[in-house]
Length: 239
Length: 239
Image (cartoon, rainbow over all chains, first blue to last red; front, side):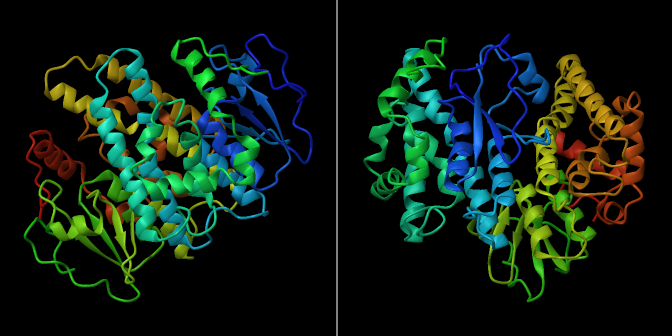
């Protein structure tokens, strides 16, 4: 698409997905959609992006995916795939370049169990800044997040590997990364200090080409997240 | 194992998993664990079962799986796999007999999306009888469950297939079945009446050999569920 600006209700329906391409319905600052962008980039897949105004979704988007979720993938055949881990696994199966999930069924199951654990961590990244903004006592939530981050750190210590699935980046790293890219915006960056292996992991991730290709600066995340917390998200921030 | 009785804390640690076997840590009436039992049976996998006292879990079980969840699989190599969809997919990959997930990446993604939808339905099967027991007004929950069951019925109507993944049983059917086996115990059987295709599906499922091999009678489910609602579940009911 020629624009990164979000499509709101009433916007023109984008054309059909070109042959040999795949389309991602996304929102530029959504951490879940970034998972899919990371996988698309890591695997060198040709794709186009349609960003969606998540507060005023186009009818044509809701026809494709009645849940109105991003990320959503669409193929030239009109097949629609959503839920971030499902989109990522689909891409890993369909596009043979650089497999991101291990081929061993047990190693694959381990990555899925890790992801299941991590899905209990992500809500804290949102609840803590939201609670702070509303003047609530978030010390309990902070203690819980600290404990969960310490466990992730311990996991790397026990494995003695640079990344969560070994010494090179695999799927699980990309599934976790978007929340760590946003630690400043979420005001939880200080919790990495007591977790040196986890901090080292974030530094290594920042050197990855797919991370570089999909990331926003801490300042951009902060600026967007402020508009989000204020209830009036600026999906086109920076354009 | 020679007993189906549940292992509570203080019980003897079961021996190592025999070569060529796989072990399922289970609870006889748990719908999530039944998913794994269905897959084990459907694929003709040799396994042994250790039932766990979920209100008084053995320390040795918590060492294997700190979350203390059933189903949990253990291999002769000491590999541990948990979360019901992860265990089922693992089994489908490791044991080549009768594949339950489709080989096409899109068809597989569709089953996973269906499962994601269904995971929002399962809580109602528990909340409605629990609310009724506590004298709460559950009419809102009932209306929501009815709507969700109607959507499942519509799904079968649109697909024009006997089962959710086609005209033969596939993974998604086994993922959904355990809750339908318990509709009488959950006091929601009447909601199937307005949904003839879904009702027909339950009747077809009852003829499946893996369903027959793993099921309990409605009366047994009712009797167990009563002890569960009363806060004192009889995991050994009927033994």
